[in-house]
Amino acid sequence: MKIISSYSIKGGVGKTALSVNLAYALREAGERTLLLDLDPQGAASFYFRLESAKKFKMRDSQSMAEGLRKNIRESDFPGLDLIPSNLEYRRLDILLDGMAKRKKQLRNVLEEFKSDYDVILMDCPPNITLLSENVFRASDMILVPVIPTVLSQRTLEQLTGFFRDEELSAKTLRPFFSMVQKRSKMHREIMADLPASHPGFLKTAIPFSADVEKMGLRRMPLLAYAPTCEAARAYRALCDEILAPSGSRP
Image (cartoon, rainbow, N blue to C red; front, side, top):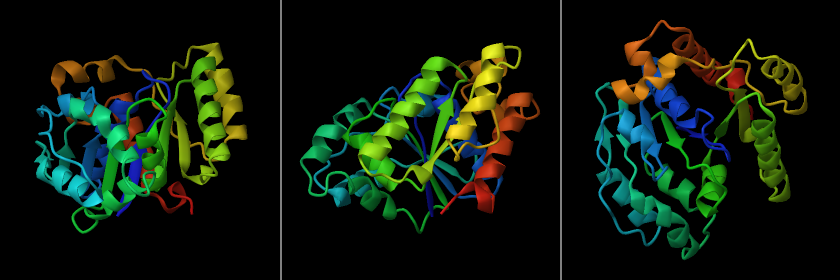
């Protein structure tokens, strides 16, 4: 089982769009996929027409696993299940803080699902908290959407700096360019220069697309309603790159 997270310190960079469409693409590729919506706003759950998860008590990793398992929902697409979000997830930091090995509990929780799924994909809230640190330690790969702008570049530097300071493995960080506007000179310049300082950059870039913005109206993945558009092809290419042997570095 591979654990992948969609994460960025900065909001509005295409993190949830990545989670939803990558989950669909993984399912298309034959991977039994579970999408865990950890973001309290629940956008990924909304896109799949799912209600909020039911509340459950979290005393330790076992009770967390049991509560999450009870909230697994089938999507409209066979091979893709979800655990919806709940506003109560905003309290996860407090709950984790009261547990032993508080920075490693999530990995223990997700191990409970390894016999059921090939991939667990997590849509994460845009901040650095104790939950985020659990995500970092649980993930085999952390996909980081980067808009080719100065502020988005800065948040990537902040994230890599955090990994360095906390002695986390930066090899799990796999940034990629998101919401790219090819006509923008700044976008082209940053895309030409930034990967040189971040060896883990994925080659696939996701273009800015009005088709992606319609996901809120359609309430389904872009790949389900516009499978041949440029952005849909890019998400599939990103999925292929991730699944390729060179996509998951040791």
